[in-house]
Length: 337
Image 1 (cartoon, rainbow, N blue to C red):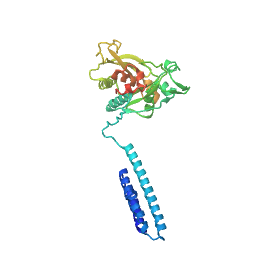
Image 2 (cartoon, rainbow, N blue to C red; image 1 turned 180 degrees about the horizontal axis):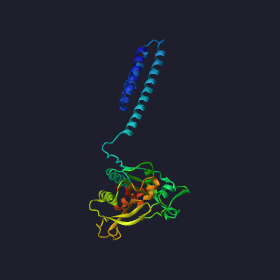
Image 3 (spheres, rainbow, N blue to C red; image 1 turned 180 degrees about the vertical axis):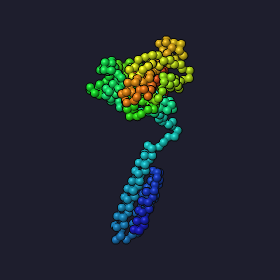
Image 4 (cartoon, rainbow, N blue to C red; image 1 turned 90 degrees about the horizontal axis):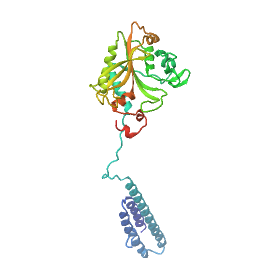
């Protein structure tokens, strides 16, 4: 009987470890511990054993019963935990999936990329420069005299007497011309800073794209051709352009460039203040003094330069009437682009 007890214990443990459901555990309990189970059958056979062996076999049967009971209890707990984990991890394939919102490029980034693309296709290259500048690059090298209003503290962010936040990306033009010799075709996108009061059309930080070309025998007609091509690719082939005389210290002659209003087609509406025209950028022929500053011979080299505000282009292109919308991070606005 001792050998049979050991065999039953071994078999019970094996079957309990293989059980996968509570019903299976219950079947094993009945099989081994029920009134007609294997353990009770062995207890009923104790009377046929000699008096000397009976205490030893009785202890073995009690140990067998306790062992099987504990083994079945552990198996039941194991199955219960596994079922709870499975319930938590279960995927209901009948439920709709969770929509993950996709990100998108900011409208100002989109417009900057489009401007870059147009000029890269025309043979220009992209250059960058520091946002913290010196008065030399921000003013003096651009032919802006000490008494010019833009050098006043009300119009420029000064860090100290010799350091400031650049107020235009024209500084990159000087830095490039100092390091490289003509011919040059360069655009310089980047952030600029001016202490303007924030309103619907002004921001203390905004984005500009400066562009310039230097070579022999560059004419104003070359500038007009480049900017006309740019405007039509940016705003559409139906756009008309006009160049109005203006003054910039770093170009001579200088002009402000307008396009016909995209809303009213030049007839006049609220967007264009009933003028039929919208200003998009400033431009002109590079002043000879700038060439002298960087060591170019103004009798040998000529060139043109232009600068545009990215926010201005984006507002016209997308019909946005408040520059502050670009910086408020309102997803209801940004998702439109």
